[in-house]
Length: 396
Image (cartoon, rainbow, N blue to C red; front, side, top):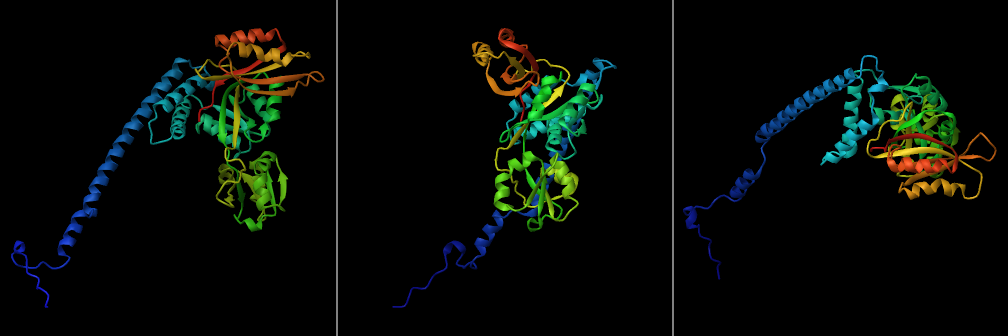
């Protein structure tokens, strides 16, 4: 039986449409044409330009008000007199509290630090001593805390940083005090045994260690320069990937980078800033530290204690009597007054044989009533108490 022939539909007047024509029209309807997209992009860019003009005008207005604050403090005030770490911490915490995205807290804090740094520098830039040379993690900590408008003064040793701040040649200093994986930087604690400087702030810096060389080739490396702390923080990676390479300890990672740039068969361990300053390449793009949360804490040292910021830490140095239960007597007042202890570290006093000083970090400010009472009670159970400083808790 022959199949039935297909008849034209009455709906189209008895005419058959060419195959695929209707589908093509539908596809054309859904397509986004470049001609219609361009005006939308132009509108968005125009809006961004308008926002940028507003931001720039507001930054200028803020700078003018900051300048008025400086004038109110008097013509004879030094740069250090304009800097108020407690006020800066309060401003940055408000930035974090207001943040609803899409930018991270860390990004916004960085932006505002740079604005405040530039506004402060209108009077006179702060001079900040740090463990140099350029390209060290100490320099990164300075930039994170004080911004790029401050003047960094690289020093050869931590001792020299203390000396320059004490002499007034630097307004503040930034020194490392502990690493999350390697523990305490003993020389920093020892300086507080005799120095009259105060802790004015703290910086927590996420530390990424990179393998750097002149040509960027792993197979050419025969020796590596680095600070002993960096060798310790990358020991596992080095054992797995470069077990036979000579390891040469130097005074800083920046010094290691300086040496490595002059030899094809040498490498250094350091941060991205060291690579930039000394013209080195990353041998591998991934950082090589063993601890993914590798963080170094730095202290900001100055010549005075500042008022409370509302979320502070107090550091004290306590020398105890050599008798049973002496340490218990030292810690008990803090427990009685509800003060949390964040850290305790002992160091030889260097004053008498077998005499130790205890470095203690406490939650709160020295002007808090509970802290005052606890420290007053502590005096009865210790040979000597030295308040090293009360300062804002580190902001990311």
